[in-house]
Image 1: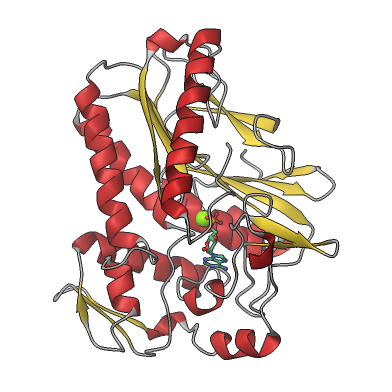
Image 2: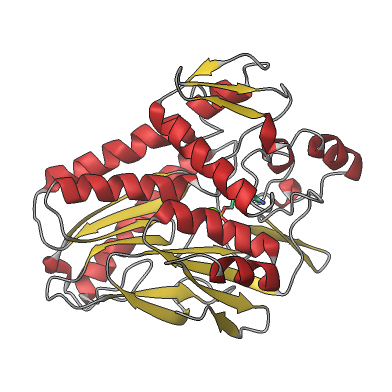
Length: 351
Ligand code: AMP
Ligand code: MG
């Protein structure tokens, strides 16, 4: 479940290639060992039992592994989808739909129907979580850099900048006109950031594509978020590891056995820097503009659709243990595991 912590904005491309190289070497070693250990879960299959592809999109390493079909062109199709959605939904990719909306000075922007659909879902979860999940937090998020390797980038923004940015984070300023496929930001200084939900949405799209192509046993791993397609080829469940926070990759605090489910985690250990003994992490409290402070290290959500799990994992983390678990228990078909900063785990009732 290793997430990319190594990317700086300036040398993104070099790091992308470096990461892909590391991933390929790691994959070769893994193949030699025939261990079947994936980035997000423990599989018992040998390396020859599947085809897979690893790449780098959405600022993170992604891997698609198919167990019941040997057609490599299906993997090509998955990567084309990943590329398409990266260039549609990333706030950092010039001329993406989100980039265009964020740079429109408040005028309407025509977008893809998928962008409308995801923004609709994002606003639904913003309402449901009372703004704990906020897709309009871009002005604040862009003040922080949690991913740079360069320590000089690890700075706490000054409070005036945060106060100013916070004034432009009202998600009600995202005006959607579904009939005309257009989106307007009524506050021209507001910025949309879908980093907390886009990977889940894209995983669901890739799963739809796989099922349409007669794949019924696969794992879609987008930066450690797993979406299971069906079951293993012997009809038994997949087992997905939930990363032990701050352990480095490969150590799991618990595992989930499931078929056809999404397993998504939001954790402070995924992107953070440490300054004077304080950890500054990427899960921002929209009421303060600073990293959320509570007793949690991570929240994992089990759901049918990954878009729901992705939005809820971020929302529940920011809501905190009590409000977060209350929200989970109010929803049908959603389960959660909350990992506390003493490494104890609280599970939802139906987990
Ligand atoms: P995730 O790993 O899905 O929890 O998403 C975390 C990412 O979402 C961060 O790196 C930010 O880009 C963005 N983000 C941080 N805090 C919030 C929040 N409260 N609501 C929505 N997006 C957020
Ligand atoms: Mg999320």
